[in-house]
Image (tube, rainbow, N blue to C red; front, side, top):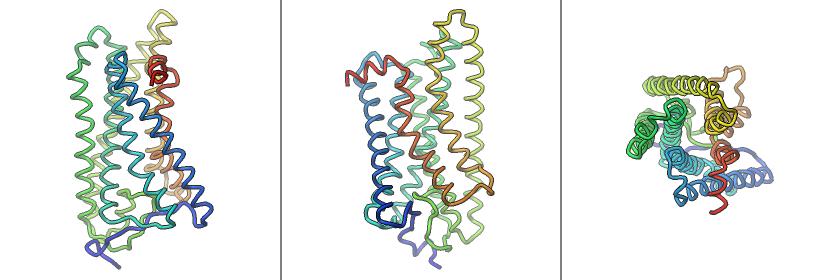
Length: 302
């Protein structure tokens, strides 16, 4: 068996064995990828160019689109390239880069969604203090904190994962490199160190989840006390897109990593992974623009 010092490539999971199905996979991923690039690119351009959208909510949305843009570009192009070239390989350095970027961007997105929940909470529950609490400097600091926390998370996990000796082959049972699949290749007890770090990260993620839930409990309580139906409708329109994006992100991620072993199978694992890595970046722009008149108007100008 090769050890980590002699590994120079990994073998990724393929979606199909026949050439026809490989080309079908390439076509489907290409369509989803182009839709994600177009949707997120339009939102980035609209928010950057339209001064009416230079508000905290749209500033955070621009950052979310940048993260989605980068995240789907980390996993999907390599999978498409492998299908097109009828190969499974990814270099050792390419695998390490994928692990870093996936952890970095997922962590950054989750942190940013937490910040966006706080923004909605302040806007609806403390509107008189919104200008003070969500000033431009505060927004830049919160967005920067989301990016930096994701970067540090990715750096720590990647360095730790690839310092573990690997001697159980080089086959990764996923269409991109991810930490749980690489840990399966470990041949020593040192993998427990990374498991411990994953537990710490999961605990922090759970803290963010509790914060989001408590924020929305306060938000819905405040919205239901609004006397006018028009006011309630406007408040719900501000919150529902964010809530839908958070629900999609968390439900698919939690199911991917917390599902019972009895439900696990290679085919189901692959489908679930696609749901949380490929689908959200493609549909998030649609969710945010569907009921948002300001954003629709800006997109029409673009």
